[in-house]
Length: 113
Length: 114
Image 1 (cartoon, rainbow over the protein chains, first blue to last red):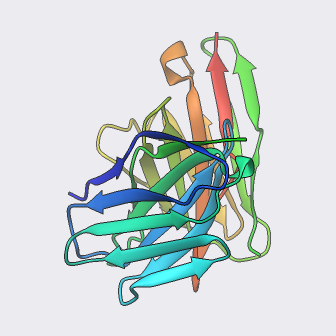
Image 2: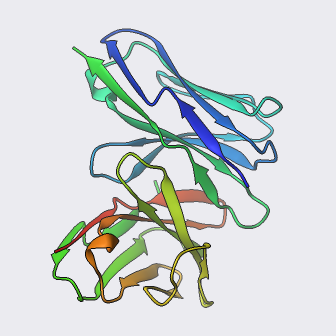
């Protein structure tokens, strides 16, 4: 059974800092790895999706990497802004026809102005 | 981009009431829809997977008679919490996927049972 762990559980940084969020998964046989953002009381916004054959994906100030062999993914946020404050979730897609996502508990990010 | 609409966003009702939550894919055909439950400071927990026109597949520990799921069309799935009790209070989120689309998520429903 896939298990996804995110470290740290919470992170507070001053505005402008670069930061890295970590995600690890136990079963390397994944279809893809996704990063989401969740604002309080809201649903999920997809940030980046990395296919199993890819090493990284970039969107604006966000860069996500994937190392299947070690079961790790990182989300790098450059030049953080207060508007980046949210909970960031990673999820492993098992594929195999089910496309079920296994989520980590998330990292709650606070960017201090 | 693809959009999934979930309604209502918030429900407050008395114990014993049945509550229906709708999940609609607005611009793509959702062959598969997923229902999740999220407890405070916890991961999203998959409750069930539903494919259009067939019975939902429930995860272990999820009562199918308590959480009724219907996916009668390619754009609509509903979750009905039957005879809801305070322990059913939670944040429920749906997602939908179809064709080449990855899962797109609704905005969630905050259910509070008094």
